[in-house]
Image 1 (cartoon, rainbow, N blue to C red):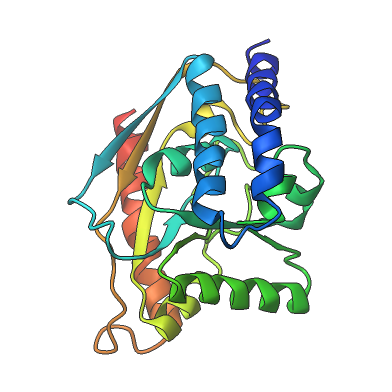
Image 2 (image 1 turned 45 degrees about the vertical axis):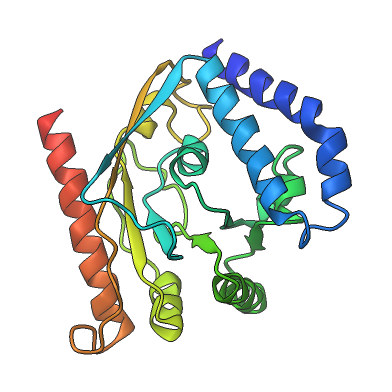
Amino acid sequence: MHRFFYFAAVLFFYILSYPILYFLAKNPEKHYNSIVWFRKWISVTSLYLVGIRIKVHYEEPVDWSQNYIICPNHTSILDITALTYLCPKPFSFIGKIELMDNPVTRIFFRTIDIPVKRESKISSFKAYKRATELLQQGKNVVIFPEGKIDDGYPPILHPFKAGAFKMAVENNIPILPVVIHNAWKIMFDDGSTYGSRSGVIEITVLKPIQTDPKLHDNDKSFEQEVYEKMNKAWTEYNNRK
């Protein structure tokens, strides 16, 4: 029932916003910031309505005047809302192309977000190119480096894919690691197996990691450094709980 209430809330606020979103979507480049705002309003308001809150811990204050490639772990569809809550600066998600079929997320992936068919090299290249363009415009890009929500329960932090780190090195953009600790306990994946409940999603935002040729002789070493820092924060939290 809680899961049903959550999706009903998302749909309600989306329908309420749709006439304005439809107008804004006609010129997404011009109205990029406004579409981002509506995405945040719909997702966060829906979350709060069903008794889910978000608590963010920072390893150090984040300079949001700089743009980042934001790399969070991924265990729940609530991760998307958590990131819209967290990030005060306009950003785009890279997400699976199936989100184009979702009645709510479709309009965002046709305008501000970046769909990708991961098994297609052409689609991956187009997504990579679009993300690079946005970074060069001073916007943030969110990439889930694990690539997907794994079927395993309880979840672990899986090895990362190289795309985010290659992009960071080529564009000299820092990675902002984000560890979403317990969204999976509130709603694992889409909630179809274990349902959902109210609660507090706890997030740790780690110190940004700048690309450094002296330390990162290749993309793989950079990827490994980010993975180790995120896995340490993930493990320490779960050991405490």
